[in-house]
Structures are given as C-alpha cells and as structure tokens.
Length: 138
Image (cartoon, rainbow, N blue to C red; front, side, top):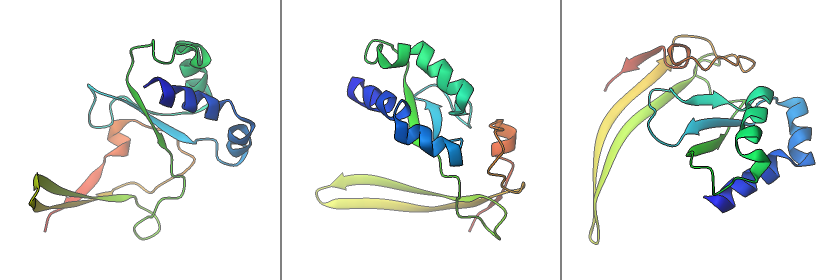
C-alpha cells in the first residue's frame, strides 16, 4: 500500500528514528508478505537491511510501484520472558463462523517455550535459532 510504504520511509528517515537507533539498534522486524512460513523471509531491520530496502524502493520513491509485499512489525527489545530467560508463546485457535448471530469456535492450542536463553543483542534470525521450542499441549 503506497500510503503505508511512504509513512514507513518517512519514519526511517526521521531524526526521531535515528535518535532511537542510538539506544536500540533494531526497531523493526521485516516479514515477507506472502509465500513464507516458519520464519523464512524474516529479517531484522539493521543498518545493512535498511540500506538494502532503501535501495530497492529508492528511499520510498517506488512506493506503490514496487511489487514486493513486506510487513514491517515493531521489534520488542524487552519481551516478557519465562523465568526471566526464555521466550514463549501461546498458540490457540478460533474460528468465527458467523457475526450475526455471533458464533465463535475455540480450540485449546499449545504453549511453546524456547530452549535457548533470550539475548536482545543477537541478530540471528535463523529459523532453527528462532524456533527451537518445547511444545506443551493441554
């Protein structure tokens, strides 16, 4: 979407953004918009990736013309950790069958706990590093 792309480039070129980079060098996680799964196509927007994206989109000039779907997600440098060391997530499933009347089906999912301690300074986005999880089902 052209407007969102232009807003993103306005953000990463702003003085405020450059100031934030001094204390937290990673501000965004970039994901391919389609055709990727299990962390394939996910990368941290570090200095090298920022330059690459600026080159691909000619610093925002090609917003709306470049046909690459990407999602920019704010990076959380201080996530909630289990035992103050390991990342975790819950996977639960819901199906909205109808909105009038509201009918929602819920299915218990599972809890995943990372086997590796979280390191906020790591730039490793290798899927085997991101998803070495133990899975617990109820």
